Length: 329
Image (cartoon, rainbow, N blue to C red; front, side):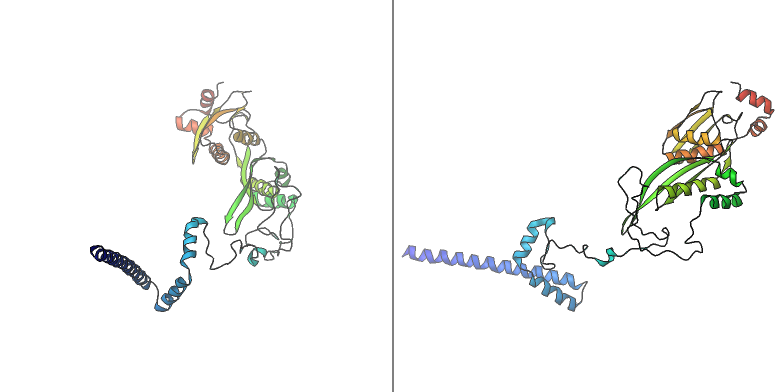
């Protein structure tokens, strides 16, 4: 009798504990749901809350568990049903040519860039052949020849047209760059050139173009002609004394050299010296050796040299005495 009375009591206790456990989980789940609804009610109205409740009820717990187990690779199967579908394949916006107002005439923004060292070859073709041509300028369909550009520069600068066409021209920097936009990378070309008559006149210019490296080089050439400056030289072969100049992170320190010394300077400064007619020079570049900064810094230092008259006036001496002290090599 004792065994028969003990067994039902144990079964009753186990059933009561099991019932108490299930009731606790249901109460906890309902509390979480109420807190979730209370949180969403602070941001959404009753209509949106009702739609959220219907949407969450349509998701099966099994599908939600499988989605969580996949982690970052998980993808909802509610929409779309095909996991391999890619919306960008048939997007009509990507099939239309996009014409920006600041781009070249009759050019679309995405030219095909060949995988060769000289990107200005014959295979540089524009993707969209029927791109509209800008007609807001009277000379939109007229391509200017070098003779026409030299004539316009002669009228602008006051120099002789033949003198402009005979100038010494050398590129300092030639590279391909990319313009970052929301639609992707737009290819562009950058060129920095130096021009000079090898007799004291020198200038540098920058050109950019999406039509090819030659167009950018042409722009840099004519821009450098506009920036021609006179450089003071000693005996038409070296600089006046020495100078130190700093621009951004680049610092230069150059000094005059005797006859036959040559150009023992940075390779970017060598081209500027040849264009200006400087044959003997020594010096060094400190800190940053960025070619563009070196070119700009050296050009500023050359055009801002103190003349012998200024040096003599500052020291209260004659020009002959100053020249004998500074250039007695």
